[in-house]
Length: 335
Ligand code: NCD
Image (cartoon, rainbow, N blue to C red; front, side):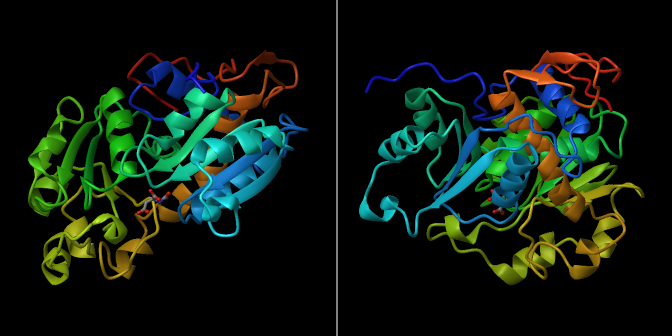
């Protein structure tokens, strides 16, 4: 079947997303609350198609969909016809024929969600594709930062760890650089090759933590993606020694620096337990914020009109909830 137009409710990546669009998702997320369910997606069916493992992303998409009154079904490689060799497109067509209105997909191959979106005609949401992008994670991280900082513009963010294999890093770099953040990438050559600096304008690479952490407002740690190393040997002890986040190293950043990690965290590897559970850690807040942000992404994908989101007198178009929230301009997301 020939490729067609991607449904405009799809969310495939951050790289090609406008700042205004991201601001609109973040604004909408602030109006949505999992504890105050709103049936904006009643009678809608959302398929969660996961070819890779997931805990927080899958659960939060599911809770988000259910809080909006949608029905969900989970399809995983094990126990589905994927095991019998069914192709991605055939699985997609099958889910659509069964009545799926949207597909949330996680896949080990970069580009799989775009490929599906070009053929399927319903919204496709990328929940992580290979080493490419993880747009909902970048959005929920921006949302989390903005709960603590007035604006993203001008912040100094250090991203530390296995950036090369990380779709989270790629999406966050695109998002933060579009919002005017000064980003420093830090890690050994294997994880932060020099070419990583070309991902966005103005990226800086630091090989040592002191340099990366100096003046940082936000510190984002990343897991070593052992499943994607494909033969690359890392000297764990050396990595831990140089790049593991400890309370002492964290003190090199600003006193009120925010400590973030998309999870899953590996205690004793990229960070110590004191850091993971410390006062500066937002790790569980990021997890919790996954629900409202994914609610907003699903509403944008599926709701024809978002009526009464957070304001019973207003009726407005999906993703363009007009509220009394301060107007922001491109590159200046603020709360
Ligand atoms: C990440 C992922 O799967 O890309 N996890 C997540 O969704 N929060 C990061 C990781 O696996 O390290």
